[in-house]
Image 1 (cartoon, rainbow, N blue to C red):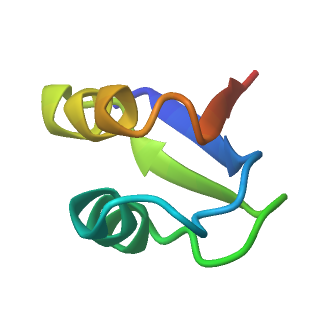
Image 2 (cartoon, rainbow, N blue to C red):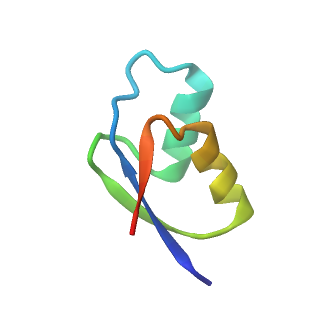
Length: 58
């Protein structure tokens, strides 16, 4: 399975609670942290929900 690396680039302060939960589910707790997940439709949907807070690292 292909892997995808996600980096939190903006702060979660001021974000709605559902977006904070999504960041927690992705394993992102601090800015400039990078996590690696399998590239599945579920993970892609989570990234889409918080796309203004994260970037995909290649």
